[in-house]
Amino acid sequence: MTNAPRRIGVLTGGGDCPGLNAVIRAVTKTAIFDYGMEVIGIEDGYRGLIENRMHPLTSLDVSNILTRGGTILGTCNRSNPSHFATGLDDNGQPVFADVTEQCIRHLRERQIDALVVIGGDGTMACTRPFAERGINCIGVPKTIDNDLPGTDLTFGFTTAVDTATDALDRIHSTAASHHRVMVVEVMGRNAGWIALHAGVASGSDVILVPEIPYDLRCICEFVEDRSRHGKRFSIVCISEGARPATGEQVVARIDPTSPDPVRLGGIGEKLADDIAATTGLETRTTVLGHVQRGGSPVPSDRVLGTRFGHHALELLAAGERNRLVVQRDGEITDIDLGSMETGQRLVPLDDPLIAAARAVGTCFGDTSA
Image 1 (cartoon, rainbow, N blue to C red):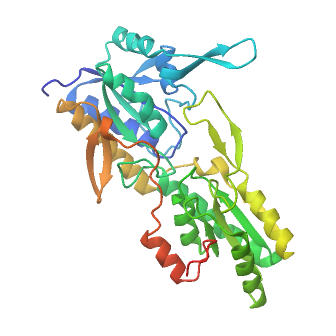
Image 2: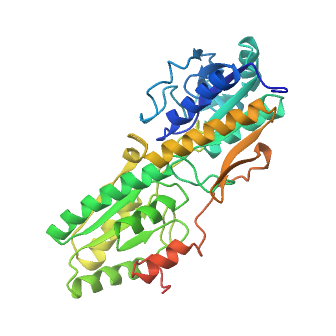
Image 3: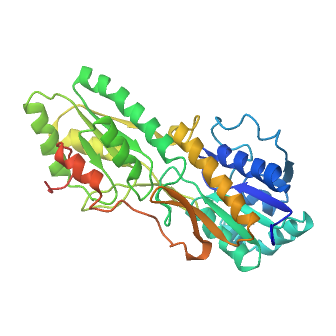
Protein backbone atom coordinates (compact mmCIF):
# COMPACT_ATOMS: atom_id res chain seq x y z
CA MET A 1 0.00 0.00 0.00
CA THR A 2 3.02 2.29 -0.31
CA ASN A 3 1.94 5.57 -1.92
CA ALA A 4 -1.53 4.11 -2.45
CA PRO A 5 -4.33 6.68 -2.77
CA ARG A 6 -6.96 7.09 -0.08
CA ARG A 7 -9.68 8.46 -2.36
CA ILE A 8 -10.02 7.77 -6.07
CA GLY A 9 -12.24 9.09 -8.82
CA VAL A 10 -13.68 6.98 -11.64
CA LEU A 11 -15.17 8.19 -14.91
CA THR A 12 -16.40 6.73 -18.19
CA GLY A 13 -15.70 8.75 -21.33
CA GLY A 14 -16.54 8.48 -25.02
CA GLY A 15 -19.34 6.37 -26.43
CA ASP A 16 -21.24 3.96 -24.20
CA CYS A 17 -20.29 0.32 -24.35
CA PRO A 18 -21.42 -3.03 -22.89
CA GLY A 19 -19.20 -3.87 -19.91
CA LEU A 20 -18.66 -0.39 -18.51
CA ASN A 21 -20.66 -1.21 -15.40
CA ALA A 22 -18.61 -4.37 -14.89
CA VAL A 23 -15.48 -2.21 -14.64
CA ILE A 24 -17.12 0.35 -12.36
CA ARG A 25 -18.30 -2.47 -10.10
CA ALA A 26 -14.87 -4.12 -9.96
CA VAL A 27 -13.07 -0.83 -9.32
CA THR A 28 -15.45 0.23 -6.56
CA LYS A 29 -15.74 -3.06 -4.72
CA THR A 30 -12.02 -3.84 -4.91
CA ALA A 31 -11.18 -0.35 -3.63
CA ILE A 32 -13.61 -0.59 -0.72
CA PHE A 33 -13.33 -4.26 0.27
CA ASP A 34 -9.63 -4.92 -0.32
CA TYR A 35 -8.00 -1.54 0.30
CA GLY A 36 -10.38 0.63 2.31
CA MET A 37 -10.32 3.39 -0.27
CA GLU A 38 -13.11 5.86 -0.91
CA VAL A 39 -14.50 6.02 -4.43
CA ILE A 40 -15.97 9.10 -6.10
CA GLY A 41 -18.02 8.64 -9.27
CA ILE A 42 -17.54 11.43 -11.80
CA GLU A 43 -20.68 12.01 -13.84
CA ASP A 44 -20.84 12.15 -17.64
CA GLY A 45 -17.15 11.65 -18.32
CA TYR A 46 -14.86 14.64 -18.35
CA ARG A 47 -17.87 16.97 -18.46
CA GLY A 48 -18.62 16.03 -14.85
CA LEU A 49 -15.03 16.86 -13.90
CA ILE A 50 -15.25 20.19 -15.72
CA GLU A 51 -18.57 21.07 -14.05
CA ASN A 52 -17.67 19.55 -10.65
CA ARG A 53 -20.46 16.98 -10.74
CA MET A 54 -19.41 13.99 -8.65
CA HIS A 55 -20.80 11.76 -5.92
CA PRO A 56 -19.52 8.99 -3.61
CA LEU A 57 -19.89 5.40 -4.74
CA THR A 58 -20.61 2.69 -2.19
CA SER A 59 -20.65 -1.06 -2.64
CA LEU A 60 -24.45 -0.87 -2.61
CA ASP A 61 -24.40 1.63 -5.48
CA VAL A 62 -22.59 -0.85 -7.69
CA SER A 63 -24.48 -3.98 -6.68
CA ASN A 64 -26.58 -5.67 -9.37
CA ILE A 65 -25.07 -3.65 -12.22
CA LEU A 66 -22.83 -6.34 -13.73
CA THR A 67 -25.40 -7.39 -16.33
CA ARG A 68 -26.57 -3.88 -17.23
CA GLY A 69 -25.56 -2.19 -20.44
CA GLY A 70 -24.38 1.41 -20.59
CA THR A 71 -22.84 3.16 -17.60
CA ILE A 72 -24.42 4.19 -14.31
CA LEU A 73 -22.11 7.23 -14.27
CA GLY A 74 -23.17 8.55 -17.65
CA THR A 75 -20.73 9.48 -20.38
CA CYS A 76 -19.93 12.19 -22.92
CA ASN A 77 -17.82 12.24 -26.08
CA ARG A 78 -17.76 16.02 -26.53
CA SER A 79 -15.85 17.22 -23.46
CA ASN A 80 -12.10 17.39 -24.00
CA PRO A 81 -10.82 19.57 -21.10
CA SER A 82 -7.88 20.78 -23.22
CA HIS A 83 -10.24 21.86 -26.01
CA PHE A 84 -13.62 22.47 -24.41
CA ALA A 85 -16.39 24.32 -26.24
CA THR A 86 -17.50 27.16 -23.98
CA GLY A 87 -19.95 28.86 -26.33
CA LEU A 88 -20.37 30.34 -29.80
CA ASP A 89 -18.78 33.37 -31.39
CA ASP A 90 -20.65 36.03 -33.39
CA ASN A 91 -20.55 33.78 -36.46
CA GLY A 92 -22.09 30.85 -34.63
CA GLN A 93 -18.81 28.93 -34.46
CA PRO A 94 -17.74 27.18 -31.22
CA VAL A 95 -15.26 28.94 -28.95
CA PHE A 96 -12.77 26.66 -27.19
CA ALA A 97 -10.80 26.97 -23.96
CA ASP A 98 -8.35 24.83 -22.00
CA VAL A 99 -10.08 24.06 -18.69
CA THR A 100 -7.62 21.43 -17.47
CA GLU A 101 -6.56 23.51 -14.46
CA GLN A 102 -10.20 23.97 -13.51
CA CYS A 103 -10.60 20.18 -13.49
CA ILE A 104 -7.48 19.74 -11.36
CA ARG A 105 -8.83 22.29 -8.90
CA HIS A 106 -12.05 20.29 -8.61
CA LEU A 107 -10.04 17.11 -7.96
CA ARG A 108 -8.06 18.80 -5.21
CA GLU A 109 -11.17 20.27 -3.62
CA ARG A 110 -12.59 16.74 -3.44
CA GLN A 111 -9.25 15.38 -2.19
CA ILE A 112 -9.14 12.85 -5.01
CA ASP A 113 -5.67 11.32 -5.17
CA ALA A 114 -5.97 9.35 -8.44
CA LEU A 115 -8.24 8.76 -11.42
CA VAL A 116 -9.44 5.55 -13.05
CA VAL A 117 -10.36 6.60 -16.57
CA ILE A 118 -12.41 4.15 -18.65
CA GLY A 119 -12.49 5.00 -22.33
CA GLY A 120 -11.12 4.70 -25.84
CA ASP A 121 -8.38 6.52 -27.73
CA GLY A 122 -10.08 9.92 -27.51
CA THR A 123 -10.61 9.61 -23.76
CA MET A 124 -7.02 8.48 -23.21
CA ALA A 125 -5.76 11.44 -25.24
CA CYS A 126 -7.79 13.73 -22.95
CA THR A 127 -6.17 12.01 -19.95
CA ARG A 128 -2.51 12.62 -20.82
CA PRO A 129 -2.46 16.33 -19.82
CA PHE A 130 -3.64 15.32 -16.32
CA ALA A 131 -0.85 12.76 -15.99
CA GLU A 132 1.65 15.38 -17.17
CA ARG A 133 0.42 17.73 -14.42
CA GLY A 134 0.97 15.17 -11.68
CA ILE A 135 -2.44 13.49 -11.43
CA ASN A 136 -2.05 9.73 -11.21
CA CYS A 137 -4.23 8.24 -13.95
CA ILE A 138 -4.93 4.57 -14.60
CA GLY A 139 -6.56 3.93 -17.95
CA VAL A 140 -8.93 1.07 -18.76
CA PRO A 141 -9.43 0.48 -22.51
CA LYS A 142 -13.01 0.54 -23.76
CA THR A 143 -14.42 0.53 -27.27
CA ILE A 144 -16.70 -1.70 -29.29
CA ASP A 145 -14.39 -1.01 -32.25
CA ASN A 146 -11.46 -2.96 -30.71
CA ASP A 147 -9.11 -0.41 -32.24
CA LEU A 148 -7.17 0.88 -29.21
CA PRO A 149 -3.39 0.53 -29.69
CA GLY A 150 -1.54 -1.43 -27.03
CA THR A 151 -4.20 -4.03 -26.21
CA ASP A 152 -5.26 -7.12 -28.12
CA LEU A 153 -8.85 -6.80 -26.92
CA THR A 154 -11.18 -4.18 -25.49
CA PHE A 155 -14.33 -5.01 -23.56
CA GLY A 156 -17.52 -4.26 -25.47
CA PHE A 157 -16.16 -5.61 -28.75
CA THR A 158 -17.36 -9.17 -28.26
CA THR A 159 -20.87 -8.00 -27.35
CA ALA A 160 -21.00 -5.74 -30.41
CA VAL A 161 -19.93 -8.64 -32.63
CA ASP A 162 -22.58 -10.84 -31.02
CA THR A 163 -25.26 -8.20 -31.68
CA ALA A 164 -24.14 -7.65 -35.28
CA THR A 165 -23.95 -11.38 -35.94
CA ASP A 166 -27.47 -11.92 -34.63
CA ALA A 167 -28.75 -9.17 -36.93
CA LEU A 168 -26.93 -10.64 -39.94
CA ASP A 169 -28.34 -14.08 -39.14
CA ARG A 170 -31.84 -12.62 -39.17
CA ILE A 171 -31.18 -10.78 -42.44
CA HIS A 172 -30.34 -14.09 -44.09
CA SER A 173 -33.90 -15.39 -43.98
CA THR A 174 -35.49 -12.29 -45.49
CA ALA A 175 -32.74 -12.06 -48.12
CA ALA A 176 -33.35 -15.66 -49.14
CA SER A 177 -37.13 -15.21 -49.22
CA HIS A 178 -37.00 -12.15 -51.49
CA HIS A 179 -33.87 -13.10 -53.49
CA ARG A 180 -32.21 -9.81 -52.64
CA VAL A 181 -28.76 -8.45 -52.07
CA MET A 182 -28.82 -7.25 -48.46
CA VAL A 183 -26.19 -4.72 -47.36
CA VAL A 184 -25.70 -4.45 -43.60
CA GLU A 185 -23.62 -1.52 -42.32
CA VAL A 186 -21.85 -2.00 -38.98
CA MET A 187 -19.76 0.30 -36.80
CA GLY A 188 -15.99 0.35 -36.41
CA ARG A 189 -14.81 3.77 -37.57
CA ASN A 190 -11.56 3.25 -39.52
CA ALA A 191 -11.03 -0.30 -38.27
CA GLY A 192 -12.79 -3.35 -39.68
CA TRP A 193 -12.76 -5.62 -36.63
CA ILE A 194 -16.54 -5.73 -36.13
CA ALA A 195 -17.28 -6.24 -39.83
CA LEU A 196 -14.62 -8.95 -40.13
CA HIS A 197 -15.66 -10.97 -37.09
CA ALA A 198 -19.43 -10.56 -37.49
CA GLY A 199 -19.16 -11.17 -41.22
CA VAL A 200 -17.25 -14.41 -40.76
CA ALA A 201 -19.46 -15.56 -37.86
CA SER A 202 -22.63 -15.00 -39.91
CA GLY A 203 -21.31 -16.47 -43.14
CA SER A 204 -21.68 -13.17 -44.99
CA ASP A 205 -20.88 -13.53 -48.68
CA VAL A 206 -19.10 -10.18 -48.95
CA ILE A 207 -17.15 -8.48 -46.15
CA LEU A 208 -15.91 -4.93 -46.72
CA VAL A 209 -13.47 -3.35 -44.27
CA PRO A 210 -11.68 0.03 -44.33
CA GLU A 211 -8.29 -1.65 -44.60
CA ILE A 212 -9.16 -3.14 -48.02
CA PRO A 213 -10.63 -0.50 -50.39
CA TYR A 214 -13.20 -2.21 -52.59
CA ASP A 215 -13.73 -2.45 -56.33
CA LEU A 216 -17.43 -2.12 -57.16
CA ARG A 217 -17.01 -4.17 -60.34
CA CYS A 218 -15.51 -7.03 -58.32
CA ILE A 219 -18.47 -7.04 -55.91
CA CYS A 220 -21.05 -6.87 -58.68
CA GLU A 221 -19.43 -9.71 -60.62
CA PHE A 222 -19.38 -11.78 -57.44
CA VAL A 223 -23.08 -11.35 -56.58
CA GLU A 224 -24.11 -11.81 -60.23
CA ASP A 225 -22.13 -15.04 -60.40
CA ARG A 226 -23.87 -16.28 -57.26
CA SER A 227 -27.24 -15.46 -58.82
CA ARG A 228 -26.37 -17.30 -62.06
CA HIS A 229 -25.42 -20.41 -60.10
CA GLY A 230 -28.67 -20.63 -58.14
CA LYS A 231 -27.63 -18.62 -55.06
CA ARG A 232 -30.34 -16.04 -55.48
CA PHE A 233 -29.39 -13.80 -52.57
CA SER A 234 -26.21 -12.31 -51.13
CA ILE A 235 -25.31 -10.79 -47.76
CA VAL A 236 -22.85 -7.91 -47.67
CA CYS A 237 -21.40 -6.89 -44.30
CA ILE A 238 -19.77 -3.49 -44.66
CA SER A 239 -17.92 -1.40 -42.09
CA GLU A 240 -18.96 2.25 -41.80
CA GLY A 241 -15.38 3.25 -42.67
CA ALA A 242 -15.14 1.20 -45.86
CA ARG A 243 -14.56 3.05 -49.12
CA PRO A 244 -14.21 2.34 -52.83
CA ALA A 245 -10.67 2.19 -54.17
CA THR A 246 -11.37 5.24 -56.31
CA GLY A 247 -13.35 7.21 -53.72
CA GLU A 248 -13.50 8.48 -50.15
CA GLN A 249 -15.20 7.43 -46.95
CA VAL A 250 -18.79 8.61 -46.54
CA VAL A 251 -19.03 11.18 -43.74
CA ALA A 252 -22.41 11.60 -42.10
CA ARG A 253 -21.47 14.80 -40.26
CA ILE A 254 -18.69 16.72 -38.54
CA ASP A 255 -18.86 17.56 -34.83
CA PRO A 256 -16.15 20.19 -34.15
CA THR A 257 -16.71 19.98 -30.38
CA SER A 258 -15.73 16.30 -30.20
CA PRO A 259 -12.20 14.86 -29.75
CA ASP A 260 -13.12 12.66 -32.73
CA PRO A 261 -15.08 15.09 -34.92
CA VAL A 262 -15.67 12.87 -37.98
CA ARG A 263 -18.89 10.85 -37.84
CA LEU A 264 -18.90 8.17 -40.52
CA GLY A 265 -22.06 6.66 -41.95
CA GLY A 266 -23.92 6.16 -45.20
CA ILE A 267 -21.57 3.88 -47.11
CA GLY A 268 -24.07 1.01 -46.90
CA GLU A 269 -26.75 3.00 -48.72
CA LYS A 270 -24.25 4.17 -51.33
CA LEU A 271 -23.03 0.64 -52.01
CA ALA A 272 -26.57 -0.75 -52.25
CA ASP A 273 -27.51 1.93 -54.78
CA ASP A 274 -24.35 1.23 -56.79
CA ILE A 275 -24.97 -2.54 -56.82
CA ALA A 276 -28.60 -2.10 -57.88
CA ALA A 277 -27.68 0.36 -60.64
CA THR A 278 -24.91 -1.87 -61.98
CA THR A 279 -26.52 -5.31 -61.75
CA GLY A 280 -30.27 -4.68 -61.70
CA LEU A 281 -30.53 -6.95 -58.66
CA GLU A 282 -32.97 -5.90 -55.96
CA THR A 283 -30.91 -4.48 -53.12
CA ARG A 284 -31.74 -3.29 -49.59
CA THR A 285 -29.75 -1.67 -46.78
CA THR A 286 -29.84 -2.09 -43.00
CA VAL A 287 -27.77 0.18 -40.76
CA LEU A 288 -27.27 -1.34 -37.31
CA GLY A 289 -25.92 1.86 -35.76
CA HIS A 290 -26.12 2.32 -32.01
CA VAL A 291 -27.93 -0.96 -31.41
CA GLN A 292 -24.39 -2.41 -31.38
CA ARG A 293 -23.56 -0.33 -28.29
CA GLY A 294 -26.60 -1.31 -26.26
CA GLY A 295 -27.85 -4.21 -24.24
CA SER A 296 -26.41 -6.52 -21.63
CA PRO A 297 -22.75 -7.48 -22.10
CA VAL A 298 -22.02 -11.06 -23.05
CA PRO A 299 -20.31 -13.15 -20.34
CA SER A 300 -16.82 -12.72 -21.79
CA ASP A 301 -17.13 -8.92 -21.66
CA ARG A 302 -18.38 -9.09 -18.06
CA VAL A 303 -15.33 -11.18 -17.18
CA LEU A 304 -12.90 -8.95 -19.09
CA GLY A 305 -14.35 -5.79 -17.56
CA THR A 306 -14.06 -7.29 -14.09
CA ARG A 307 -10.45 -8.31 -14.68
CA PHE A 308 -9.56 -4.90 -16.09
CA GLY A 309 -11.16 -3.08 -13.16
CA HIS A 310 -9.49 -5.31 -10.59
CA HIS A 311 -6.07 -4.87 -12.22
CA ALA A 312 -6.50 -1.10 -12.23
CA LEU A 313 -6.95 -1.15 -8.43
CA GLU A 314 -4.01 -3.51 -7.98
CA LEU A 315 -1.85 -0.96 -9.79
CA LEU A 316 -3.06 1.90 -7.61
CA ALA A 317 -2.59 -0.12 -4.42
CA ALA A 318 0.98 -0.92 -5.48
CA GLY A 319 1.75 2.78 -5.96
CA GLU A 320 2.02 2.50 -9.75
CA ARG A 321 1.43 5.69 -11.72
CA ASN A 322 -0.03 6.51 -15.12
CA ARG A 323 -0.53 3.01 -16.49
CA LEU A 324 -2.93 1.60 -19.08
CA VAL A 325 -4.47 -1.80 -18.36
CA VAL A 326 -4.25 -4.07 -21.42
CA GLN A 327 -4.67 -7.66 -22.51
CA ARG A 328 -1.76 -9.21 -24.39
CA ASP A 329 -1.49 -12.84 -25.44
CA GLY A 330 -4.45 -13.67 -23.22
CA GLU A 331 -2.91 -12.13 -20.09
CA ILE A 332 -3.99 -8.99 -18.24
CA THR A 333 -1.03 -6.63 -17.89
CA ASP A 334 -0.31 -2.91 -18.24
CA ILE A 335 1.80 -0.42 -20.17
CA ASP A 336 2.88 3.16 -19.62
CA LEU A 337 -0.04 5.46 -20.40
CA GLY A 338 2.26 7.90 -22.16
CA SER A 339 3.71 5.19 -24.39
CA MET A 340 0.36 4.28 -25.94
CA GLU A 341 0.55 4.79 -29.67
CA THR A 342 -1.62 7.44 -31.26
CA GLY A 343 -4.13 6.50 -33.90
CA GLN A 344 -6.12 3.32 -34.21
CA ARG A 345 -5.26 -0.37 -34.24
CA LEU A 346 -6.31 -1.56 -37.67
CA VAL A 347 -6.90 -5.04 -39.04
CA PRO A 348 -3.62 -6.26 -40.56
CA LEU A 349 -3.93 -7.45 -44.13
CA ASP A 350 -2.31 -10.74 -43.14
CA ASP A 351 -4.78 -11.40 -40.33
CA PRO A 352 -5.46 -15.17 -40.25
CA LEU A 353 -9.21 -14.59 -40.17
CA ILE A 354 -9.07 -12.83 -43.54
CA ALA A 355 -7.19 -15.78 -45.00
CA ALA A 356 -9.71 -18.22 -43.51
CA ALA A 357 -12.64 -16.21 -44.89
CA ARG A 358 -11.11 -16.07 -48.37
CA ALA A 359 -10.53 -19.83 -48.24
CA VAL A 360 -14.27 -20.47 -47.82
CA GLY A 361 -15.16 -18.19 -50.71
CA THR A 362 -15.81 -14.84 -49.03
CA CYS A 363 -15.34 -11.78 -51.22
CA PHE A 364 -13.51 -8.77 -49.77
CA GLY A 365 -14.23 -6.55 -52.75
CA ASP A 366 -10.75 -6.88 -54.22
CA THR A 367 -9.12 -9.18 -56.74
CA SER A 368 -7.11 -11.20 -54.22
CA ALA A 369 -7.81 -14.90 -54.22
